[in-house]
Image: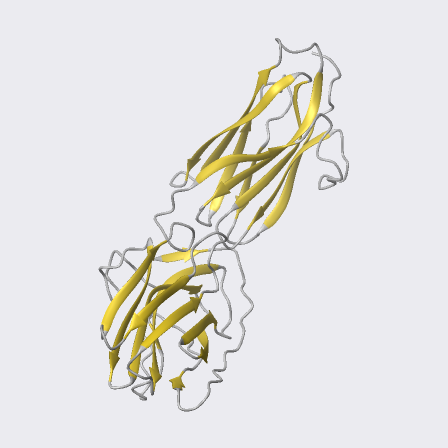
Length: 319
């Protein structure tokens, strides 16, 4: 599954420094459409970008909403396969492995290949040698783990269990089935967000200032949206049609005591999560447009990660 995204992760070169006698075989791997398989039997190995429909994965039983570590221990050699590891599509991968007693910390990172505007799921295979047949805690630090998601960490007792698989469910990009959704993150008081100058203080225009991040979150701040002065609540309703490349945002109001005979400009902060990158038309529905232009624009998240679109709208003082 080749999933495009708008983020260029700066690669960090990995070097494994471990105390003797622990011996780890790690290297930077730049991926291609086919798996890398160096001559050294203990050299790390990175699959191509996984296509779950065609089964190009080391373990097709792992679905795209799972992040798994499969391990095998044999005669002092720990063989780890990280199933559905998230990396930039084009940089390859690198490792930094640290051992501290019975704790093994593995930090995975993008390699130093030229980055693309996309993330992808891979299977990443590597080895740790000269381990004791005892109990270890293994912790995997992943480069694109969304905020709030559980860290991959588990305890393995090689004396009791020579092989096992540990999995976590993940739903955020680049994992998951992409259950995108929208929510109204915040809304200003009458007059707009304090100290927000994204629209350069332009009171004669209504603007959509947007940004898109590596976790697949599209944030849109709609400035100078006109509503009644006396509202109990301002609302947002979202229809996200990825196949049709159309996102509609309907802003509304719940009036306080029937409302007042005046209107006021507000700023809305909308957030759409787990949105696959691509080209989208964004269309706002607003109740007080009269004969003014609607806020409709197209963005290409494969090319740009932020931008601004404005329409001229002198704001009337009364209804």
